[in-house]
Amino acid sequence: MFGLVPFVSHKDLEKEDNLFNRFLNVFDEPFMDNFRMPEFKVDVKDNKDSYDLTAELPGLKKEDISLTYDNNYLTIATKHADSKDEKDEKGNFVRRERSTSSMSRSFYIDNIDEAGCTADYKDGILSVHMPKKAVTEQTGHTIAIGA
Image (cartoon, rainbow, N blue to C red; front, top):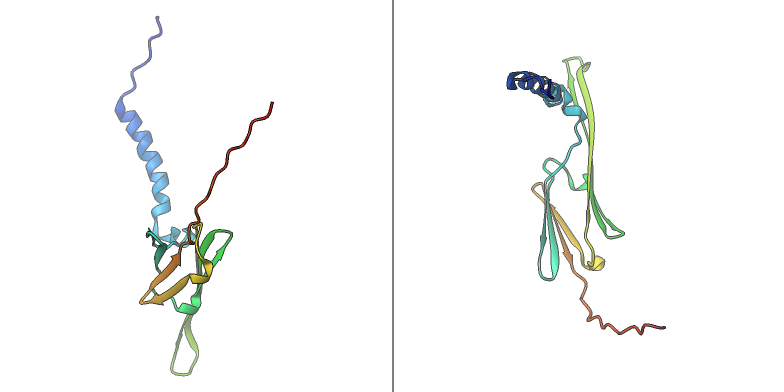
């Protein structure tokens, strides 16, 4: 015949789509939570003369957080260790659990005055104030084009 294509119903495509979605949904199962990369919410506000960053880090202590600025990248890193012990009347362990977690995020922030940066951590919120460097007027010049 002349290039006839067999008719494929949408139901056949839906079956394949459902099969694919079921495969992807495996990664939403609760046992997969341990394999996901932890993350935290961050807002960066560009003011006229500074940048203000706020990061939500609930449940952490100040000692669990490190903040570095290197090569124009601001990096927030956290590391938290936790243990929970349950003992019976004799002091024997009934259950003992230990866990560690770490998170890290980096942001490219150029033209800041490193010496003037300040950070504060209160009620699970990390606030970082980064003043911008004073902008110097750049003067251009004409470049002569040779022969």
